[in-house]
Length: 226
Image (tube, rainbow, N blue to C red; front, side, top):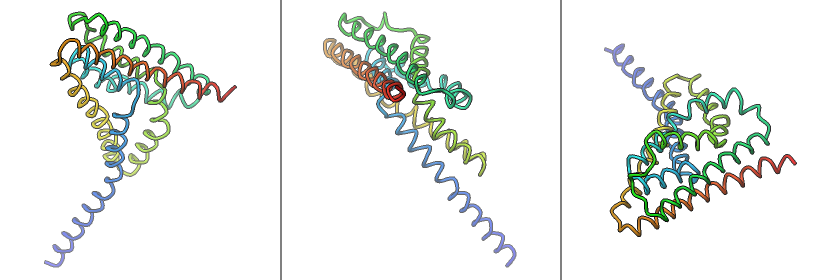
């Protein structure tokens, strides 16, 4: 009986240690995923713009874009980005900012003309636009290079399950927060047409702000090397 009781105590102790050990990685995944999902940026602005202009399904496609674009981003973070000079990162931001600005102009024209969903982007265009916005933004690369990859590596060395938990919770909150925003802003279709057009134009201004932010960030990288 004493042996069985000792075995139970050992099993409970091990279970407690495992639970305590994975908590930091779970909390990191949740907090980093939520902050990344709600952080102002071009992809968040595009989720809002597409949800307002074309409804929930379009906003959801944009929200799920990181599942497509992040795999090459993570790979390039290790292979290429760490070796790029600051001017190259600034160049990526300028190209990405120009693309986001083009999306803003297109959204503004749609809001001004009052076009309906029949002329909205196709599912393939939604995914392509969102993936390009994410791919041309250096910030995901820098996140995985400076935070995501080191954390996942340390977690993997402790226990591969911890790394899977960290990455899984990170993307759950990253995409989940954008899904919630897509749902909320897609409800604007119930508003009168003129109010809906006003919100569409406002979402275009959000894209302009995201483009300006990318241009300003590019100056930080390029200007600092002059």
